[in-house]
Image (cartoon, rainbow, N blue to C red; front, side, top):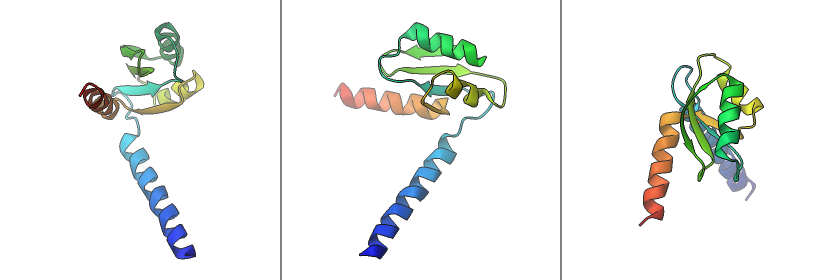
Length: 105
């Protein structure tokens, strides 16, 4: 039984690590910054500006801002500005579109 638990936890850790590597933001490419639910669009825009990025798209429903920043530490700056998850923008846009199409039937 102990081996099954270890295998399950190990498998989940590997899957999470693979996701994080695939979703890691690339400097100079669009980045998606997810904020807490209920964050207003002006608050997200201020956070992107404070991090030194250029805003491409805001989605108040999903509390996500798609932006571009030049610095290597731009993703870290977004975390400091209040984002709770920062991932590759193209991956996030694909996920959001898929979720919306499933929600709309």
